[in-house]
Length: 429
Image 1 (cartoon, rainbow, N blue to C red):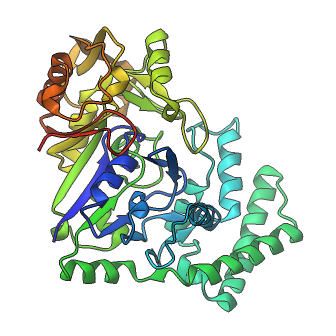
Image 2: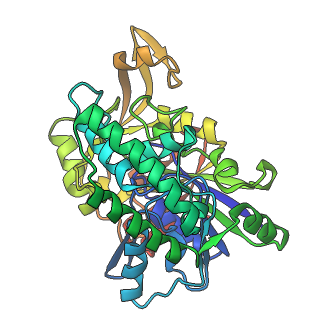
């Protein structure tokens, strides 16, 4: 039995979807432990590109079991769109997908609240995807959420929805003059009662299911969304997501003991990107930043919103920080091919803050605006590496870049991705 946690070490968009899909071939179960439809994982197979917001990335492997854990906030509308899209491609997952009874639901009023707060000039702009995740997690903490187990019991659900819809309608009217009229409310009730009938076919006790599979010595991947620097506790607060993408969240989001986590692998993009507001020490707002975005193929636009990603040089200070938080000793380096055309490459090795050198990411957020990245300049390789499959055949300067990343992050680069497709991958061991 082997369990593996796949974690993003930056601000998300590191390539976790491709990596999960790669590893899934040798695993039996892929379980999603947090997040919701506010993140998109892209998997490219041949000429087909799949973007998953809720379904675990291993779903494309025939006979692999996938679980959406209790730590996820589930948007039924998006879930069934993804399921239908796979059906159109001839992929049936009806007997391979399970959803925890305890997973909370994103309701239509969560999306309205999310969008309203984000556009309110009196509120701090976070740069959310307006997908309702934050308000859904807020209701979870306030003990007023709707869960999958609520949705599949029509009679009690109807009563709960009557109460909650009245509360949300009053809140929206009194604070934002938004009216949820009777027709709108009746439509929500009808749709979600219908979703309950559909979700009943997938609902399980996720914790019990996983622990039984562990006893059977099954191999399990735990897949998160976003990245460590968007963690609600350990990220660049308040410009963070509403959940914990870090490895420790697996135990809470899937209901398993820490003793069953064997290994954590960190995913590191060969440069840095971020979507939305918030600190980004190595961000490049010049032609080089634009070049990174242009060369980074269509994936440097957020799959959820279409917004262009902010781009910059690799920040090894935050990767080292993520390694500490998650217990990462081994990393997968992705999108190395995007750097093919650069004559010179910069890598941030430490920070200068008020004339003091910091080799660790500061916990005191008041210091973050004063960060000055301290860079090392390295020679680029200026040749196409997308067809390379053997580490020894990489250009010398590419190998030097990887070696320096290992030194600065105190970890081993075991896999290198040189393109978006499954086979554009170099396995070192």
